[in-house]
Image (cartoon, rainbow, N blue to C red):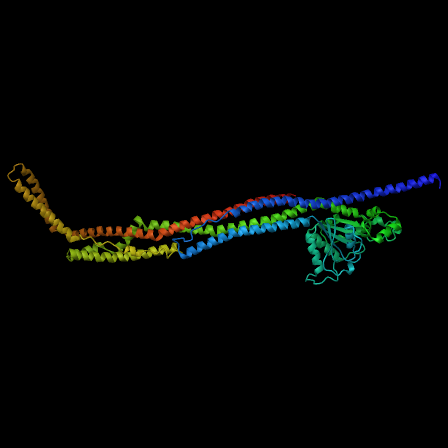
Length: 631
């Protein structure tokens, strides 16, 4: 070999080596970026967990304030209330105490559970989860082996799988679930819609996955595949469609000669892509499917990534092809870059939202529920009870106006006047010439009958009035009619007594006049006085004569006036006793009702304190929720 040929050979080897190094740079950079994206995914979950843990502590400190609260000690005897009213008050207090203690107990349990849930969801969010869908032998396992740098041990076993669960594989913090084939014949326990255990297991993984990867082959496309893809699109979960281009490179030399590698792109697969979306999707969905569709060569993906696989090593030894060349051929880089962009743009953000959502739903749900429950209790129980009691107390005040003072005197006088006709009694006594004892007896009997009958009517009216207002306190507010039975007797000075007194006065006047004349008969100056006395005596005599001949009507009127005067005095005493009885009957109840209102307001004040705690905690939760929505 000449020196020149030796130099040319050396140069060619250097060129080939340099070219291999250059070809390795792009895959290594993509691999490094993908690993960094997975690391960012994990870091985002951990950072958000640390942030939310601080908010949990903040909310917990607010909630712990309730543990320092205590319901007031209220009067257990509750004097002045009926048994029913006491039972109602005690039931109200017991329910309030149950709410109060329940909040403290549930708050403690809820936040212990929240801490565990956040820790669990953070650990789960640290992993990026992909679930693979497709019919049997479409290339799912091959793609999964490429993603997780497998050795190819599971490739080609889809048709022999008998499991109804999903297989999980891990590489770094990337989790891949390989699901059973679509419409597997071995899928059992199907429901009325035709969904069996295998499909149900796959659907469960779809709900928790970050991304669904749907794999199909260009050699055939079944209606079941289109239907399954439509279901994935309808679920709203992020997805990508991998079109596994059917092109065998077992004879790699012939593969390259036929330039089959040039068919692994969107342009070459345009017809298949249009057929894939077909009439199954709306224009918007079809556009989304096309945008998220990547043509690949599944086996080349695996060969470019496989480790510890004899078949792959033999292939490289036989054809002298590099991993970088197969990596470019497989178009695996586009798929991995798609995942990387999604992780950086959506995955990290979704992790923050997921952790925030757990906090918002658990903490916000607890405080909203308890706050609403306490508000309803205050509105439906305490406020309504207070309103009823205040209405009752107002009714008491109205009764006081009707059953005391001038109003009661007028009502009683009206009732008695209907039962006692003083004019008729006076007429009867004068016309029959009753003496003083007979007049006194007639008047006393008539007064007793009239007052007793009026009292019975008044008592019944008063009791009915009370019953309409105090339905639950009738026993405590019985009208004390016995208090009205002690009516004062008729005064001893009857009508005849007045006449005797008048005659005594007249005789005393005449006697005094005679004595005065005898004493001043010989005194000239006394004649003037005697003349005055004489005139007065004449007037007295005339008045006496007139009285002897006074008419019966006049006598009846004078007797009636005396009856009316005495009746008015009896009514005054009756009204005084009625007022005393009324105040004794409702006074204690009114005081007890007022105390009941005050105690209810104390209960309400303490429960409102819990609502304030809930509102403050919800303000913190709202901040997290707003940040979550703005991520």
